[in-house]
Image (tube, rainbow, N blue to C red; front, side, top):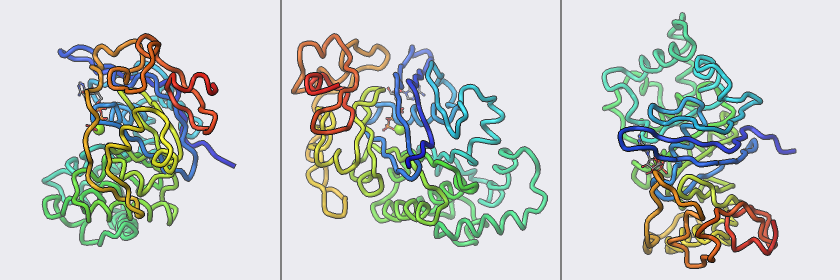
Length: 332
Ligand SMILES: Nc1ncnc2c1ncn2[C@@H]1O[C@H](COP(=O)(O)OP(=O)(O)OP(=O)(O)O)[C@@H](O)[C@H]1O
Ligand SMILES: [Mg+2]
């Protein structure tokens, strides 16, 4: 039986500043089942990071929760006190590895002191037996392929890949129900990327984390680890399907173009370099258009797409939802 770990309903968030209001996430609904590794893909600026931030219930400054719900472990994040989220949810229920988080390690603190401080921040009390705690951390790190000696190092003494694994290690110390990782591999070279992916797969194999939300603009990376894939475009989800279906049988015109912009997938899931980008640019999220947001770039567009945003339709041949008017007549 499938067990839902997280449910997101009509989630909306915007940035407000001197630049105006940017509607970065505009009505996202999705649920993630236990055991799934769900990939979220889409071009730069489509709202992946903003969505991850909103899912944590404590989005970064400037990003405001406009509406919608995030339900984790039967708890509705936006009805919880910020203190409860910090102490009880983040790390223990939801591990989060933000984009570029390898830079979040304090450059003037040894990893072990950074961890002890982070624990104090989370739990709110001073760790009484530091040695015991650090031994447990070392055991946990070992499962991620990190030696105990890493704890004595300063961030600058570690490679980018090791720093990233340290951050993953810290985020999974409490065996969270779900781990959210945002572009964990983008700053790494290909070999180190592979190592990090193997680390994440291993975390699942040994039961530290069963469910992962993996955000990346790079589909070939997602193919290697995810069984489900969500495609975002301009602040909204346009398609959700099994990873194999997304690659072999994409439905939304945007997904099709995204797949075709990659030359070919190798049997191991890796891909040859990108052939060409998708012509045109996504809309300005300060003033998103009324109709389908992909309309100006879509080669299959219909007249009605210009004025009306499509709901999700289920194409007859497939059970996956697609937000595209092309599928209106084949089912709903
Ligand atoms: N701090 C900010 N202030 C104002 N607008 C922002 C801020 N951060 C992001 N945005 C805008 O919000 C929208 C979504 O950005 P977001 O960073 O969530 O996209 P993304 O899909 O994660 O992109 P990338 O692949 O480059 O990481 C974009 O239009 C972006 O310009
Ligand atoms: Mg991002």
